[in-house]
Length: 225
Ligand code: UTP
View 1 (cartoon, helix red, strand yellow):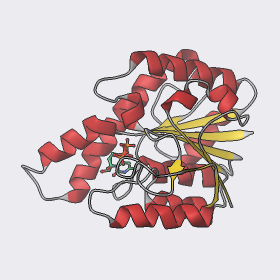
View 2 (cartoon, rainbow, N blue to C red; view 1 turned 90 degrees about the vertical axis):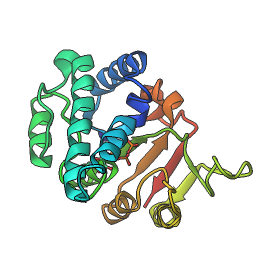
View 3 (tube, rainbow, N blue to C red; view 1 turned 45 degrees about the vertical axis):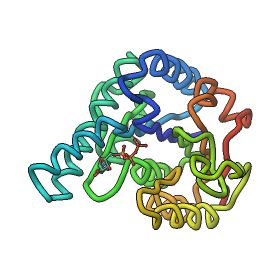
View 4 (cartoon, helix red, strand yellow; view 1 turned 30 degrees about the horizontal axis):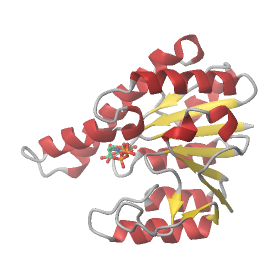
């Protein structure tokens, strides 16, 4: 299989870099890459949000702030490259075609952000579409897709399996609420729908056994076209 992994910055670097988790995920990715083609996109997390917040004191320019966010995602990508050692291509990849080329060299391409105006979820969905990946795995700080926000509604139910259409509906709903952030952003959900990309959304616990998760042993949500 060809698999794209989308690792949220807040998973990799919650308050400070989660060294143990980065080591675990690097081990799992290495193991998976023995049987599958692997590409990875890494997010910015709290550090990106803090830098963007600080920059608000100096400029109202959203695109400028997006560039700051992109830099942070690339710093996180470098951490994962360091943990993957020889397995990873040593530069942060910023072009989907380069990611394809790197995979042909039997190395794992690691991307951060690419252009202003979206998040790394959208980058991962586009990369999966471009590479015609068999599976996109989103690793986030919620353990799957819920029918409502589990942080606000204690009765929220996790959905085991949903359609890409349903994912778009849920992502649009949470985006329209102030401060609301869904498991994936609405643009990424749209790309997943457009590319008819089979997608698995899992939390940090399942990520520790990623090798089993891609074979179906997980507590997350499977999204199918
Ligand atoms: P993230 O993808 O990390 O956003 O990019 P996020 O929604 O905060 O995701 P988590 O918390 O890691 O899961 C951080 C910021 O970097 C800029 C955006 O400003 C984004 O909010 N960015 C990122 C871009 O402008 N373009 C990109 O391709 C990626």
